[in-house]
Length: 471
Image (cartoon, rainbow, N blue to C red):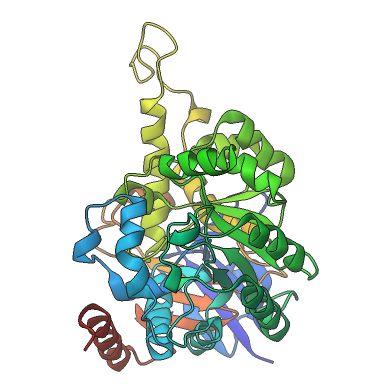
């Protein structure tokens, strides 16, 4: 049995049901689970490993609800820097199809390392092009190397250009093969138990890259198992809305309802272009949303109605999206942008009367703002709920020992001690000093502790160069 004592935090942000923040707080951990939470002098005085968090804020680990880890190999691709979604995808499809198993390993570790350095302890990845020998198995093995909690996607593309889809035919797969491989991956890797490190999600890519039959059959397959989630992109752009209206005569959410893709085992990436009725459908069915603010800005997709989702009771988490669309895997950056974009959306709504909504004569009510703590909650508890986890996302006895810390003694945070928790969101995004997953240290003193990164980064650069030049 192994133990860990976390002590003397400037503030311990529990995100428990009372949203307690404990000055001078700490945790006592045994075998990967939190056993005690409270003031440091109320905890055991010794443990196998002691982490002194003086001058640091300790928070629950962030939960990333949408990523494409392989895209760390194609950041800032020149041919796609100034394109919106559909042409952006067309510029990338065949590049991604050349990613080898070795490149899959390094890109997965690089993306997970970047995320862990920003406080992420649980990652969902939505990979969907399995060519050049790459399999989701290679990602699962890479996640085990670095030690993060991993929800892996057996994603898929099946609707090529010749049948009216967006992807080239040569990057798609046969649907019978897709379903058989989905079943193989679930039965080999999925762990529905408390504290599980690997879960499988079945993830046909998007309305414009798979058939209705594949969506229906995938949902039927996933629901034969315990806690196998369903995920896809939805309502990301107006191009997509036009596509489903022209092809199926339905808006994207209506179409997903038609193929049995609403429910508490489903969450959608982006969900930018929805109306009030569709928000109500998500709330009534338990369907979740992965909000990806930086990607939505970079690709000019729009602003998701995050405040309306939260007010309606929709489960909302944060996603960094692919490193080629947000060009970062930084969860704290995304949490900050989620707060700011929600505030921007308030200012863009039509005025209700002769005065503009932001008039000093008619200030916004407190309940209209998305606060720094609201944003943290979306990134922690919200993400856990989206992934269907009840064992992560907040720090209380019985929960997984997944947390991170930020050192307050930096230039960027100087002057923020009046409210150090809010300062973490309002000020420039920092890197974690410590990140702990399952009671194991992944980031120590701001460095990845589980994988030797310098040689791996050199290998990653070689793979990226090979993709771009074919050499």
